[in-house]
Image 1 (cartoon, rainbow, N blue to C red):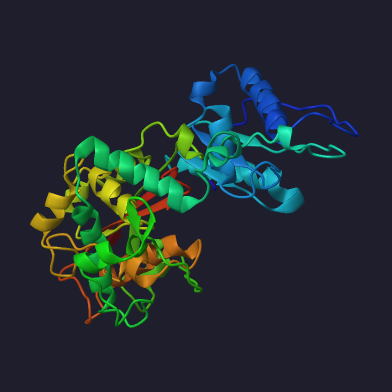
Image 2 (cartoon, one colour):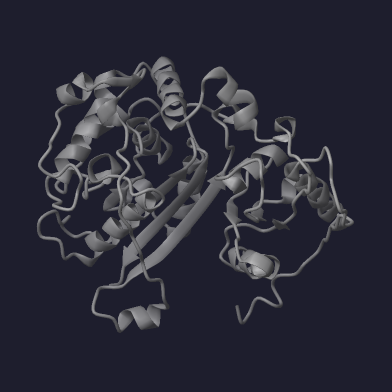
Length: 387
């Protein structure tokens, strides 16, 4: 932050006059109004805003707040986050925006806070498109939404159920080398996956992540301090982020997601193609998520993930490009939001090179991906070990 003062500036402001009550007004509407005022004050076009920081108090959406706000605003930011520091949230947003700009993740950040004060908040004021356009028609919950994505992918490219099932089977196989995995001691073949109960067509039970209890944590510090530690330092070589929507009905494409853009940015920063990294630590809440990520990373053509996996020699440590050696979330389990962090932790372990039971030979680089909502919020990292 020492050198940000000459590189980053506040160029626009917006403010709504305080009111005791705001009957008939939703928070999302108020956020849009004050954001439009700030954008006008800055004399820029809305399309120039590529970063978004919002607070948690958006009554229309209890989770995936940045994605829901971006969706309502018609934005597709390359950096989005929620800042919850109480009364310090506003100032906290400013330095986080500056840091994101300095890191090359975006150029223009909208920082917005606000809330309505209706005596009673009627349902008609809910501005969450998922509740307006998805839930009333049965697209409620992750299983239904990801099943829709999988069906669209199958219809467009002709992929077979066996292709997706092979991803779940590979995850289970990797889990057998990880005693901490929830499915350690419980392998599953492709036939087993396809024989598991059909939950929401075309998704079978074993293609769906199992929620579990657990936790993950990492320490990020300076390269100098990391070099003094007991382990091989793992550096962040590149990062990318993209948010395109919240509700699956608003997705720009049902067969490709925002990870395509996020991975491209991360690998460009790192100066390495996805096909050149030693380890793929890819978010896998559903088999369709993993299939689409393989394709969006440019490892193969759209619809060709099944053949790519066969040519890759599976997913284990001896594969051409190993995938999710800890079992992935499909084999390890998903400890809520920490599920995405399991992929970071496994990548660090592989690059450190101290896991004899599932170590990838000569692992120096890893591509890590994270996914939120329904293939809506995407983050990609390229990690590399110190020489």
